[in-house]
Image (cartoon, rainbow, N blue to C red; front, top):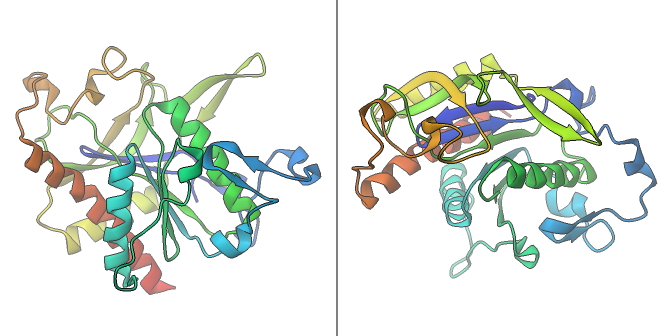
Length: 273
């Protein structure tokens, strides 16, 4: 795992979280919070899970990939796509279940060693989700987990529909870190990317999905949808204006492109193991 790596696909944003800070020598997910060891029960409130009522090791111990995105419907579709890619077949008449539906905030689907989870809109909602998912993986004793965020955004100087794998991540002031208040202090957390993973995603996309236009670029992430960063308003080239011209069918097809990249990447990684 790599800390705060984020891959933006203009119709795509991929976040890859972790790094040596979040795993031990065995590759197992670890937490820096020392109080976690003294909890009789850890309640993941927004996911509607608890260490007292759920067997995390049995439910999630095999997870190797976590894909997150804004909407529940998109993550449900991604779960089915990944299942097809990696050969997970559901019994006749069976459907994937939102295993986090009781929380009524996020949607979570599990297909083989992959979790797909919606996080809503905005950094605060995403932060809450990732905190609880990382604790879930810790309790499940998961190893070598890759986080990928898949979403949509606007582009600067590139054609709509282009998949962009980010090599750098910056905030609204073009600084390469996330700044937030924690216990009365402003904390800066560096947004580092795994360049080897960038190259791996690029190579897989170019070799196996050559029909998708793809570039490597930068991601600008802010706390606002409209005024904070025109780059993230819509699926367009903002140098040409701010009106979305593509129809719904085209937009849905574009949104599927980064999902195909992520699913193909996961299939490739699993084939190596």
